[in-house]
Image 1 (spheres, rainbow, N blue to C red):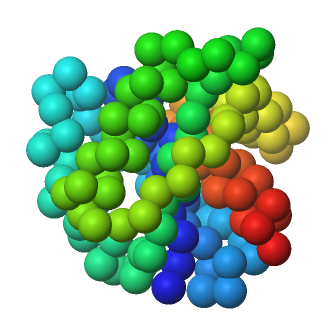
Image 2 (cartoon, rainbow, N blue to C red):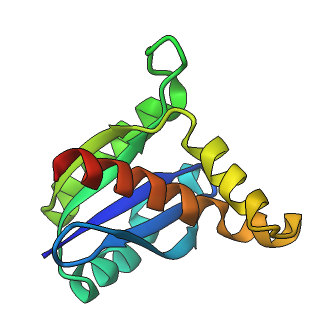
Length: 139
């Protein structure tokens, strides 16, 4: 069974999966969605990902402020994790993702990726960093 990593934003969700041994994270896609339209719109997509990749657990990025408090985006991530548990029956872990997006941006800049390409993959890269951080801590 694999672990799913998610970077949940208002308009996109970066998705990563672990290998079967839980050593490495690989980005698989970025899902477009409208957070304000509700979770039901992505239910079929999430079900398909969970089934295809044999997911047993999801790690959802929890954006915190630098002082450790949780704001609106963090509360939205908590709601998303609850949705995954209640609707899809998989265990979720909230993972502190402070500075993950900045780290993803730095990795992509170092790879000399154009701004246009970076915009398309930044959320997927953030999901990889969230999941890899979790895997590294767990192993």
